[in-house]
Image 1 (tube, protein in one colour):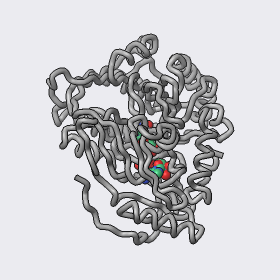
Image 2 (cartoon, rainbow, N blue to C red):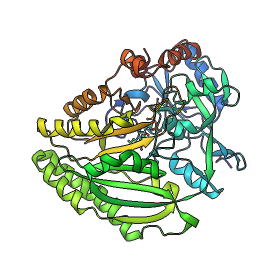
Image 3 (cartoon, rainbow, N blue to C red):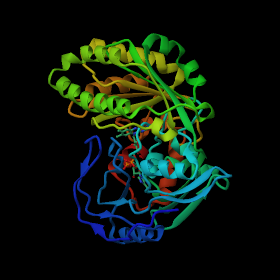
Amino acid sequence: MSEARASTTAASPPTTWRTWGGTVTAQPTAVHTPASTAEVVDLVRGALERGERLRPVGSGHSFTPIAEPIDAHVRLDLMCGILAADLAAGSVTVAAGTPLHELSPALERIGLGMVNLGDIDRQSISGAVSTGTHGTGAGLTGLAGAVRGLTFVAGDGTVHRVHRDRDPDLVSLLAVGLGAYGIVTELELDVLPAYRLHAVERPEPLAAVLDDAEEIAAAHRHFEFYWFPHTDRVLTKRNDPAEDGAGTPLPRWREHLDDHLLSNVLFEGLNRLVTRLPGLAPRINQVSARALSRREFTDASHRVFCTRREVRFVESEYAIPRASLAPVLRELDAWIERSGEHIAFPVEVRFAAADDVALSTAYRRDSAYVAIHQYHRRHMSRYLAAFEAIVAEHDGRPHWGKLHTLDAERLGRLYPRLADARALRERLDPAGVFSNDYLDRVLG
Ligand SMILES: Cc1cc2nc3c(=O)[nH]c(=O)nc-3n(C[C@H](O)[C@H](O)[C@H](O)COP(=O)(O)OP(=O)(O)OC[C@H]3O[C@@H](n4cnc5c(N)ncnc54)[C@H](O)[C@@H]3O)c2cc1C
């Protein structure tokens, strides 16, 4: 079932590495592409001997410097595909380098589907799980909540296989692992029989949606909305399993019009315009929010979850208690109007159920997520500072892969198990083979 790809332990010549959002650039001394767990062991042992540091990296879609290398990068591009599937048990084992856009169609071909996904599928499964990537669904956890077991190579070159049936506490600590404990080579995940989703998207007033947000989220498998700053309008998205599989996908022309021409080509043009003339943002948002029309379609779950994001942006996202959602959005709205800041990118709101994953943003807390975005050519610092000040009052927990300024001291008050995570890191990576500045800042 897994794809055989050419094996090589040789390092590629260094080139500049850049995150998708352009937030971090680095010059790794080497880029290693092992093809097996044994080759990862050799790499780690070699690095230990030479006193080098290795940073596992996925597809570079984090906005934080979480995957920034001090010395070399390790990419698992050659470790890709489904290694085993147990349809009766609802589980699959996947190679850690598998990108989500390959994983979902491969699962569909054998009659399976991911329990939930975020809004794009360009990430690697290991990168997505390691930072606590999530989609939306009041009764559903993020991707790490679906982790049954992991195989990884620790900082001393030893191979570990952990499973939640045998050691739930260790899996809880390792799932959102930030790439701090080792290089994950395989993941066992909960999956569902392949399913189709019926999507209903429509514009609505912000106030009405905020009043009922928790009830709406509870009534649908997936509910999210995008609020257009400077307006009182939102675009809501409700996705539910399609009854008896009925319903049709969007016609090709409509998909092309909405998801390519409007969401990407036109939106890029508007953002370039707003970069030169920021004062146009409120008027553009008014027009965009009014121009959005209702659409309804049914498709394979992964095609409904994920869209194309071609307009480059930077993002920060915090998980907050659900009851804090309305106050946070109202305070953010008030700040935007008071500050004179012009924001053309919508604010995204999603939901997740409490989980038991130690470094998950939804650890033991039913959560709402608020994400702010800014076009990559515009400054984010004032907006980010105001947003962080607002969510701080509500015990907001930052997404590990999205911009935030918190350090271990503050994070320790938000994540009750941060000290356990730090102790585990010291045990599994005593020489700091996987360390970088970001990990030292957030874990201490
Ligand atoms: C356009 C866009 C849309 C996004 N949408 C969402 C969304 O809907 N929901 C959401 O929650 N997030 C979202 N994100 C954030 C994104 O999902 C995370 O930042 C994710 O970690 C990126 O995965 P990656 O493969 O690019 O990992 P990278 O950014 O390359 O790495 C992330 C972390 O994973 C570690 N890692 C990677 N591979 C391994 C391995 N084999 N073993 C151990 N550690 C490893 C790295 O060391 C690093 O710490 C989005 C980001 C972008 C740019």
